[in-house]
Image 1 (cartoon, rainbow, N blue to C red):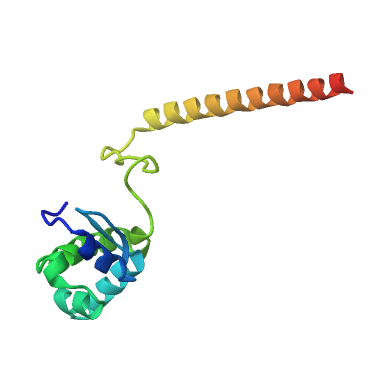
Image 2: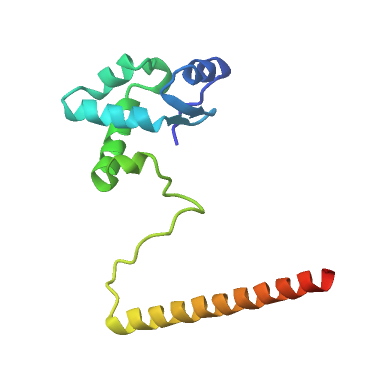
Length: 142
């Protein structure tokens, strides 16, 4: 989060930029397409400030260091996840969490697989019983 606090006029000005997804008093969210475009231009040799200026950003509002910081962060995402890294959310409820750094032993894998099979079989039995109860309820109505 930035130390910069945007006023209402600055927020309106930033919202007018098509490369901005969302603006609040303290944060600015860039559109994924812009992030990808900026990365590709940066990899071709363009400076971060030049990229932001050409795309309609006022550096007096967002800060002179912001382009360099953003591109540094976006490059890491691009290297780690590729283009899809800008279009998928990796935080919050949808996230699967941090992957385990330890490799699983065959015994642990087998135990997990057996537990999953037992869960799926129980789920299937439950759905079969529910289906049967629904059929019986329909027959009683007739």
